[in-house]
Image (cartoon, rainbow, N blue to C red; front, side, top):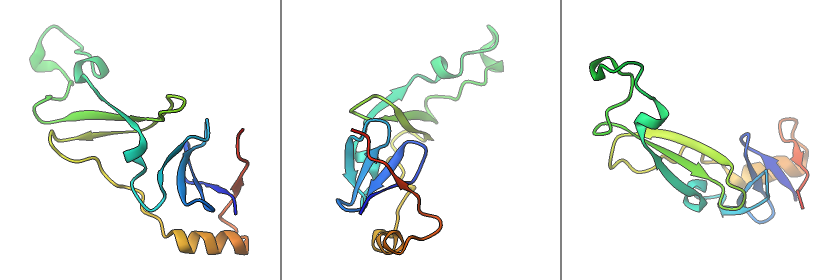
Length: 122
């Protein structure tokens, strides 16, 4: 069984049922769970990401940090940013990818047309 590309930076190792960074092959988390649990997380300053376009704060496009925060999720092996999300303060990180691993394994074994094996990086 091999690895299957799921996003630009994430693969699933079907044999081990694990999320992996496809840049450095770092094991992140169980493929049956949220890969973000295995990531390094950074909260960014909104003014750094969205700098004010004038000296008048009332005309700024910078989101109010009392209403919005920016979380960035990084691979702990190579530092590649895997995902980012804007959330209200106190809101838990989202779990946006939940796959049927058993069906994915079956499709992989059958050589399904949409599953392209990924070569494992060493």
